[in-house]
Image (tube, rainbow, N blue to C red; front, side, top):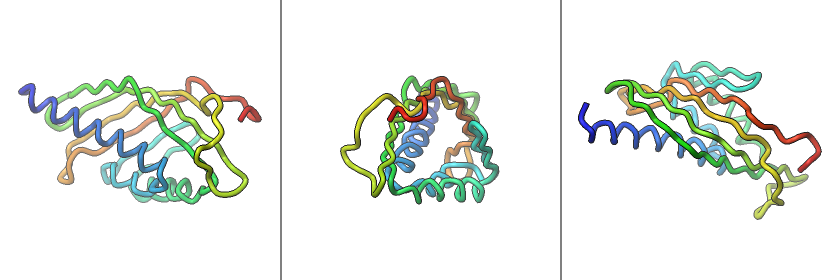
Amino acid sequence: MEDLEILLIERACTRLVTDYSRFVDFGEAERIADLFTAGGRWEGPDVVMDGRDAIRAGFARRAGVTRRTSRHVVTNLAIDVVDAERATALCYLINYRHDNDGPALLPAPAGVPKYVGEYHDRFERTAEGWRFAERRFSLAFLRPSGTG
């Protein structure tokens, strides 16, 4: 593969990662399903969603949580282009989150992150462009309950 083709694939996959965080943090979580292939999979601790319909339903519930202010800070993104149709990635996630008694607050009270972990991603080129084929989240650190 040409260097330019690799860079374009990396950029398309980076945009998916960025859009994912922006959608969940700014009240558009149900749009996350559009970032996945039709048969895409989202997996996290105690949660598995297979296919766009399940992903849309799962993230629509998150969009309905209007008392929450969150920021998904993604860093150390490393994308490996497998070939012209597939890529993989690993990135770290630091999640700051505050749940208010009423509507979400800005600025929200700051504290330690709610959790820190990593996303393990598989991407595929589709007729719609690059999409997540799988996004798997695993926890490395979890803030104890009652500490913010």
